[in-house]
Length: 322
Image (cartoon, rainbow, N blue to C red):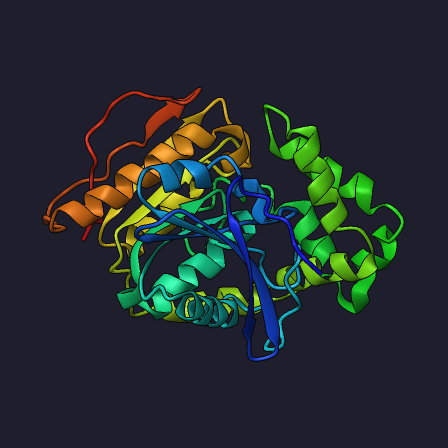
């Protein structure tokens, strides 16, 4: 079956990795930028970001995560560290030794796991609108408990997909509508809804959620005596906001954070220009100058972008308090 690209001008690849076939689109030439989507999304959510990266001299690499979109289910489980291993092998097949790694929503923990497990292969890390396991810093966001769908998706015995088997269309549209202040375009909505049609597709998605406790344990163990050495950017939207950055502060040597104005949860859809600008600026800053981690730097408040425009601020690298 021939697959059509969702990113304008991209090439679609089927990448076999130890029993898994990941479908990935590539666009542009230059340093690799690995783009990891969330739920309920597919690689198609990067369709406005990837061309901007390519025009700026980067190679956008956008896979469907395991079991989602056109990719086949995981064979070693859905824990973020296992997903990260396959993503690194995918980069090997594509010929990219290093990459700027970007994750949003459900893609945050695999992106984090890539940087935590193989920092030598990650030039920079960008995380947006997702929680990093149970690390401290998200208390304000979780004041009333985790989002209700976390528990529903994690229910054992395939309960969630059984309940939703005949309502997948409505369920996915609910999340797309709730996640965007601008509204997900109708053609993109159709692509995503079709990708989650049926009990099997839903079950694959919910397996990512069922693996969250194991992922959180892995992250917690890692964070006991390790820190990220990769320059990291946190991009907040209108739902999780600064919680991702707050989780990163104690474990990250170099952290920059921004809040996108007039933006919902699906940051690459609501603010693609501003999102891409931040990725490009961060990547270029990392590549163009030696990173310094001056002691005594105090955390600064996030800068803000909105409607595709930026209140121009110098790129800042921040160290956590000692």
